[in-house]
Image (cartoon, rainbow, N blue to C red; front, side):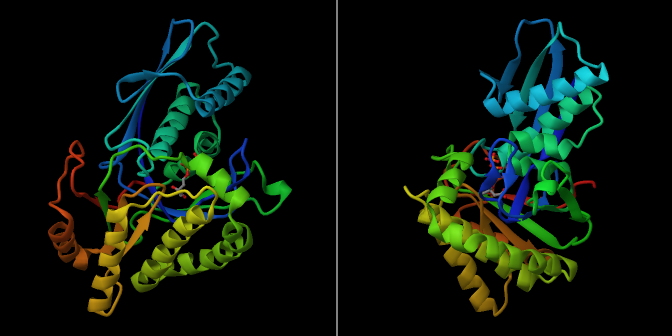
Length: 337
Ligand code: DP6
């Protein structure tokens, strides 16, 4: 039996679109922050059982295995057969739970598949690239295998396909003053799963097809520079532009994919107003495939930002059960390497 806890990661430079759907190769590079697993995480327990089929439970409820899960399992079992660690008479019992809303744009598939891939590779004693394994479940999961600031590079040529492509850019200790506030305004499951939405965007959005690759190429060195110099002013602008662009290509897709809601837009306005009044970028927002905001700020500004956010949107809470109003979770980046 193995038990794994894996944290979520928040993309600042967003992964959106696959060049190879089967192997989950991204169209463009992405850069993310892996958060501390103390807070938002998936816990996965995997055991070998004498049943005649695999069992999967998510948050206490039984579910059929998804095609992606089967792909990860088969991949592991083939490797285990080669290694001689596969026991044909046993099946798997996979019990996963998230301590935050599942499929609400809070990166639950990233932490879920990262914990599952790591767990299976341990159970079968595999000596493999766990990030590539996790990626087969959900693209963004490969970044949760590493702590700190993580770079997932899209293959630039045929020869780069299938080779390890995720790496840590900076340790979690690199920027100790960086803070993330997670504002949960809705715990509803997203209306369109990201994989469906991505496909729609790549096929139907001229904005994506004509501009996205070029913009990302320019932004990669800018993001790295912002992290290297701990330049929050620059990081904040890049992060917000990226988030806006993700949702612009979603809206440009046909039929449009709408992830943001009225609270998301109110938070965006709130952030720009605060930054304008301060005469500098005190904070930045980023949204994944959902309406919930991730707010970046620095230690010196965190208390003021938190107070103002709570005054404008609701009281901070550390529970996630009641999602009426805005709930704010505080995060520090402190995942071990
Ligand atoms: C907006 O990794 O969930 O969060 O590979 O289809 O499972 P699949 O997609 P997923 O997409 C994440 C999209 C994003 C941006 C990001 O995390 O980079």
